[in-house]
Length: 113
Length: 112
Image 1 (cartoon, rainbow over the protein chains, first blue to last red):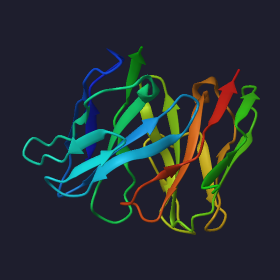
Image 2: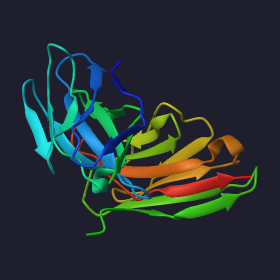
Image 3: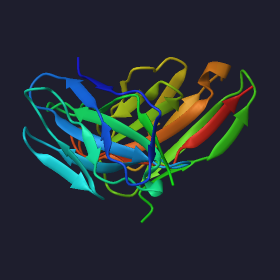
């Protein structure tokens, strides 16, 4: 079945550091890939997504590229801010019917000033 | 801009008590979901409803029941709460299974 593996946290960075959170997936066919973010005390919200190979999703300075050859969708940001402190979830959706999203276990990011 | 609304936000139950978590969405979405979030386990799907009138089990359905009351509402019931059901519960919806999912703010449930 479909699955997502993302790097375990927590990740602690200083402000303005470069961020990478690794995500790899296992799926049949051509899934859509997502990054969701959860700020403290809130629900998850979509950060970015990509629906086909080589697509790059981007939002709020974050980027991720759908790499089919390496089955990866790594999240990157060039310069993190304290306000980026949150839990980040990689997810995928199969391309058949109404199958729900499959989530990774989440990576907690803490950015210190 | 209500989106997905779930109630209650916080609840403490005694072992064996029952309760229902309510969820409503105002985006005219077809699909609705209940997830639970536990430390180190990420999000796990309990039940989902692909469309009005249908429900399906997710990864961790035991101890729960759901009702898709109409297109807007999808409730989650704990018939006899157990401490293992202490968790944060999230309701979510999407237009179709493949589309972006929108989450509620969560319900913190403690079973003592």
